[in-house]
Image (cartoon, rainbow, N blue to C red; front, side, top):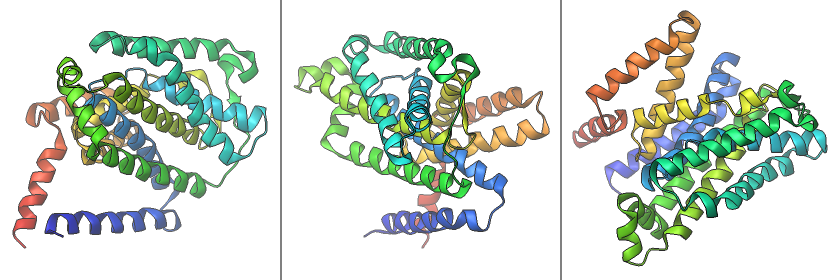
Amino acid sequence: MDKKNRYIIGSSIVAIALLTLAPYFIPLYWMAFLFFCFIYLVLTEMWVLVAGFTGMVLLGIGGFVGIGAYSFVIFSTCLNWPLWPSLILSGIIGVIIALAVSSTIFRMRGAYFAMSTLVIANALFAWFSTWSYTGGGAGIVVNVKLPIAIVYHIALILAFASIIIVTFVVRSNLGLMLKAIGSDEDAALTVGVNTYTCKLYCFLIASFMISLAGAIYFLYPGFVTPDAAFSPIWLINTLTAASVGGWTNIGGAIIGVIFIITLQQFFYVNYPGLSMLINGIIIVVIFLISPRGLWPAIRSLIEKRLKRF
């Protein structure tokens, strides 16, 4: 095992240990901060998988967050089912929605595919805004009360699972075919890649994980509304984090998420009226300095430091 792999494994073990024990020695504010990072890490890793490697720009990411949240609240609150079956089924419902629309939207490419996913998200928003069974536009209370530390650990497990899943997929034969599709779908089809099946597998994995993240997120506030569940902020933050970290960098998603959530929390508290403007300026400056994102520069610095030992 070379130095690079030893460093990665050692750092991962330390990070897992510290994050697992964090709720026992950090204030509630920082626990909430890390919780938000975990949720957005799942979304960003799935964005890297779908958009970064395969080239399918998923503008409707908020649709799957919302369907996961509402599926969970229906099973856990309306039907009074236990926590874990409700969580798993919320992810499965996201997969069913993805299966239902895939045959239509996979006929489109580029901007047309991206806009079709956004239309689906808006349609789901309109449905739940008027569906009285889940409270319509007023929303519904989540009838599951868990200690914040438990919710934190569930989100932590999902975040690490997302990193492992994306790493495994990218290094598999499926990952090679997805990269080929992302580079040139017509060329991949010519050499025998079943582009529809590969894209479908990728889309289903992402829909399950994003829907599950949506369900877990709303365990924290304990209340679901269409405006929050299908908010465009899910897309904005995820897209920005992926862009800052690098669209095809699994590790870059971690850097991007931490950077974006830190910016938002700091400037929202200190400069609420100017927070979005300041965030935008800083992000534009980063893109000008490092167009490929922060992660390639950080990785290069780490590799140079390791060579000294």
